[in-house]
Amino acid sequence: MDSLYALAYAVAAALACWESGGLKNARIWELAPARSRYRIAANVLAPVIALSWLVLLLPPAISLARSATTPTLDSLRLPCAAMVLCVVHAVVGFAVGCRIPRIIATPIVAVADWIIVAFTVAVQPYWPRHVSGQFGIFGIGEVPRLVTVVVPVLFAGGFAIGLVILWLPYGWRMLRVVVAAAVAVGGVFGAYHTAEGWRATPPMTGGHVTMTCAGSAPRMCVPEYNARYLPQLQRDTASALRVLYDAGAVPAPPRLITDSYTYARTGKPSTSTGWRMILTGPVRSGDAVYQIVVRSLHFRCAQVDTRTAHSVWLWAAMKTGQEQQYRKYRKREDQDLRAQELEEQVHADVARVLGQPKAEQAAWVRRSLDTCGAKSR
Image (cartoon, rainbow, N blue to C red):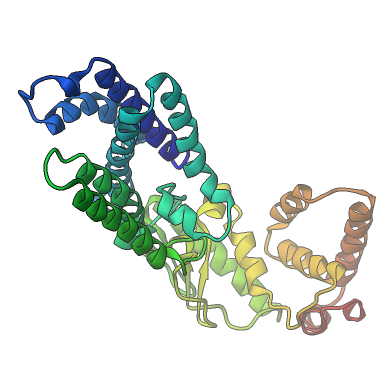
């Protein structure tokens, strides 16, 4: 949906500009007042705003209907903020159409609005993207804080309210100009001051998803939509960690392994007794046990020799029945001549180690994890 924000705003601004120009060409504003000018503008902008909302809401609505998913109140924050911004952009486009011929202004407004909003994701510092209304992608269980959706409304809304004040049919013109300028500048500086210190990811909260847990030693928790995979996953994980523990490769397994996808950017770090790992994708693809096996092998130095690392991973994969997953990951990497030569060396090292007694294998893997270098072989 992130690609629809700029399009919806551009549609609202461009069509509002065109409709405003039509009223100007018809000299509506020169006629004797029978209705409020704001009511006339609202009647003209209603279908424009409805169309821009349709651009925003129709694709996700179809997706939700196909998956039989009911949106939550938290999930409506971004769409509601974007709908308000469509109204704001329509007001700005309407004001442009009142001053510039629509045949000239409409295409310029459409292109400029889209570019100004869409391209903010590719610039630094980060605050332009946060005030533009071009909301990013949020993960499962992540919810933007209210300040995240208020900032773009404040930024663009200041301009829109200022234009509405300028359009008041009564009062001193100079006073209206001063008040409109104050509102616009206040909105801009307020939004800038709020978002200036944000990083690429705006303020959010995580963990807004129901978790399901099963088993013990380790107990595993995943989002409930992955619950059908959990019993088998927990059994396979416990078995793999037990094999590695018996082989002397790892200490006591953690008491808890939690899927951290919903905490990836905002959650607590892992500890020695409880791990947080991104398992949502691996659970569905069947790679979760291999990921846990790799996670359990702690190299105790900053720089790890590539041959040593792959030898330890392959040894652990073969001991726990995850050799196919290891090979799948290796196929994703560049398979040039050097990579093929390394793989041959790794398989030779592991074949030699597997032919040794259990105590010598345990000594080899502990030495490999401690030294991380070629001398461990």
